[in-house]
Length: 336
Image: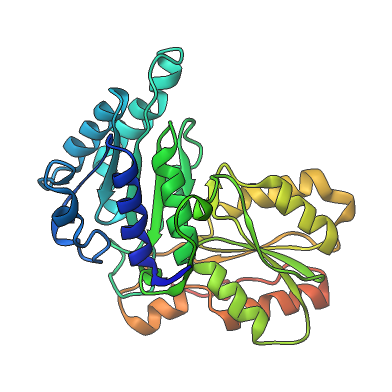
């Protein structure tokens, strides 16, 4: 077990897969120099330019090349410097790579991994701070993981590279510097589709992913009025229904903490599924704590207000427990 930062866990996972499988190679803009977050640092020196390929600024071209290489038996890991940049190349992924297995009746697999920096909190502005999980949910043939720690980054990224179907790995920019113990090697690999119960509790189940796992933990640890069972989903597609249902059946309450904006957030599906399966066991309606339907501000204080804070999570859950009703979000009633 080694203590490392999340970005170092990325490098370690990539290095381990490059060493163990000669069909694995990397592509992306500036990855040879490590990229803006130094998450591929020194890999080109170790594995050479044929396996760590610096690409032109043409996401459509190199993602398409990744799909083709995967269909031909390679295991490409394609980096999008920021998740927003994938917009010009979604056709290559969502209507080509995701469907090759189906269209070929299983003759072709597409073991393609797409890594992308995502998320707010570092002042990158609205065009470089989105999480954009909604772009991938609802697309058959794609898995989506969002690690929250160095260990989950290492374990999920290695699982993604080994998958025989496309996997999108959203790496939260604000967590690249997070430190933690990491079990490497085969023992450190985390299966896609399995959640992690971060803490045990009896009053409410909090479901979170990525950066909001830290928000939820900070909220619970800052007060003593209630205890929460915090579930780190780790994977959004497919999400771990069994673990969530078991927890909510015990606590009787569900709160989902999302970084995404309110409309169309991933918590809607989880809330709907909980209601349909556990209606008679709920002590309160499921409640979603999200960001508002607005562009992510560049100004530091406004960005902090935009994202759910531990204090806000505490106030929302406390109100839910006291009234049995979902409290209104902070922005309701604001006038433009």
